[in-house]
Image 1 (cartoon, helix red, strand yellow):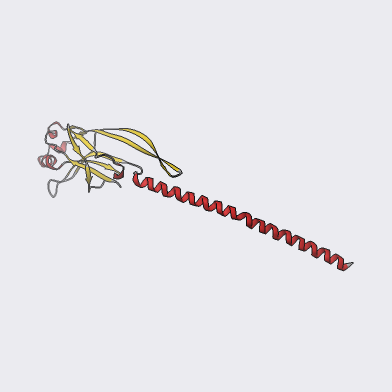
Image 2: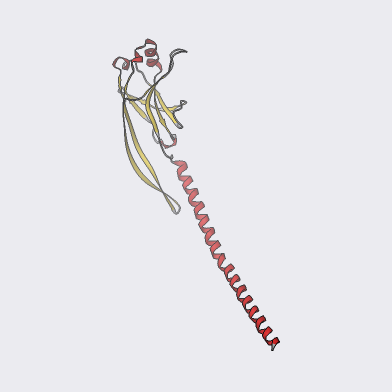
Length: 196
């Protein structure tokens, strides 16, 4: 009777072992589709990231503007530079969205037309003869922009009725790039008020 009982216990243990082995085998088999799906998800995420990088390489990122301002360089070695900020400053911006499609993915980008206007009042220091001379010949209108890649047209500035094309300057304002143009302030120094 003891032998029969041991055989039953051994067969139950073998039966449980067989069940456990089958459960482990089924679990491993069911993990295969999970890994395949995870690989597909990873591949799609990589493709989306690559497509986004492709789109955003052609479009600029966030844009920030600094200025407009007028820069008056030193006339003499001991002279001082002057940065004139507008007394009144207005920004008009017309923003349009555009959807770009790359494969399965869509990305929204923005196009805008920005108009910066300002009124400059020259300080009393401009009555100085030396400063007047430097202002007449070497004054620059500066506008800081974070990313030049976002410009689609040559930016223009209207200063005292004359249209000027802005170009990249080697000056630094904040972390971005600077657009500048030389301006003639000879007439303006008499009135001391400039409309941009």
